[in-house]
Length: 491
Image (cartoon, rainbow, N blue to C red):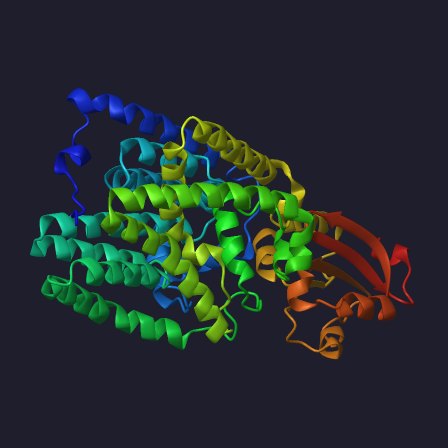
């Protein structure tokens, strides 16, 4: 059995004969940076991003079911600016660091050439670009996960108490970013118990320290667990396939966000040709990559497989047994780099055919990125434009009813109008009773979350007369008046 060795020299010097090796990685990092800052501030904040801003602004008293570290970063960063570009730039920074870290780890686990191919795939990865342009903790989770794996490999090679303490700190940084980092810690633990169970003392000490440091935060988060974490979707084996599909193409090729809420065969059917093509390609590369890695080193391959598979499987199982916690691909993004290590090893193992397959993957990534930047079907709901339109046309006393996206609407709407949030908790009668004016605006977005049967719009059409309707990406706004009012009453 070959130990996983991290050579100190290969990590810390950029001079002499190794300098040329770092030129390609520098180019790839620059490509990743360019892709991530392109149109970084073009779309408005999502509801989750607004939560990040608000929890950051009220960091001392935040009450979310996510750990506090990311919100602490946002709290500091937003003191310097609050534009979409500026606030999201934190995700770009940590995403670039994550790519660099995983290159370094991959360099030792799968070799320089294979790691370079994996880093190329990471640099143009649509899912990594998506999260780098999102004001949430998932790029930071990826970075600290890379740091944890790197420090774990150091533990295996250096066999020192200091290395264990460094690993424990790295693990806590990941855990205090997202609770699902625990799945990575468990995967690393399984690997250690399989291959290094004669060195249990350091492992136990480190994990007792991690548990003592994290349990109070864990209890706090569980006490603030929402009735439903994420939009409810029935757990399904299809999520295994979709997760690795998303690892290849991100969220901007294949099913749209509105379709994903009903992930089943009928939703996937229009995309079957793409799914079959990518499924065949990735399966081929995965099998060849695993076979090549396994023949070279069973120890390292086991580590890679555990990181690539365990978080995904465990995340889906958790969702199946605890339906309140909906599975989401972003929760298990820690598995992405190891998955790409396997694919990259498969590409390198079947050169020159691998070069053609790599080109296919790059073309697919390019198509997904084009959709990310340009295709409205995959864009975030344009609540910003809807808010600005209403603000420019409405009277200050006209109430506004907003379905699902009220937090985003509040952020962009600068008027003094009464805004009524409808998230499905109010009865329709109670909703109508809040409207004491002859005119009212109805803002509808993500209605499948709060009003899947369209009852609110039907109710409004029954008791009011629609006057003006405008459609923006993912948002429909309608101005209504009571049955006895005329259009001139607004002038």
